[in-house]
Length: 128
Image 1 (cartoon, rainbow, N blue to C red):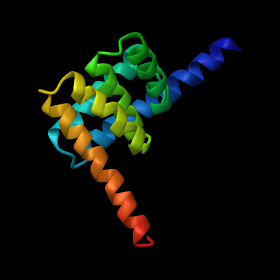
Image 2: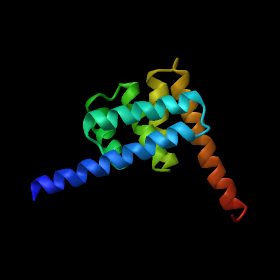
Image 3: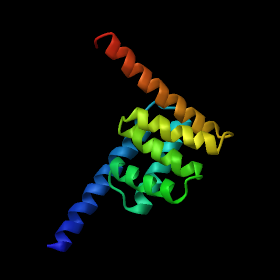
Image 4: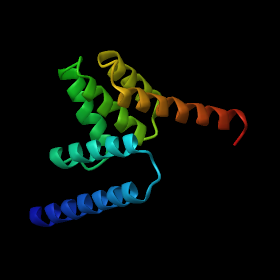
């Protein structure tokens, strides 16, 4: 029974990663966003995470243990962004920029999160 569960989990993770790889290959996102997604993909593979919600839990524990680590805050923000929880993403990415103000990558991610949230608010205001 345990072996069957392991196989199911393994194939689920492999399928999930395959979808992400295909998304990265065929998407028209710019280079920095693809690098962010590859970074997250590496974290997910190395830590055995299977969802962005797992990413939130992992990075939340990292920022609790290392509250001044910009990369952990950025990972938390990217996980929230992937879950379309843009307000939480903005809060985490603001911390990443606070602890590493020279990072253009973190500033760009913060900009994307603000844009997504503004688009949602605009669509809501327009009744879309």
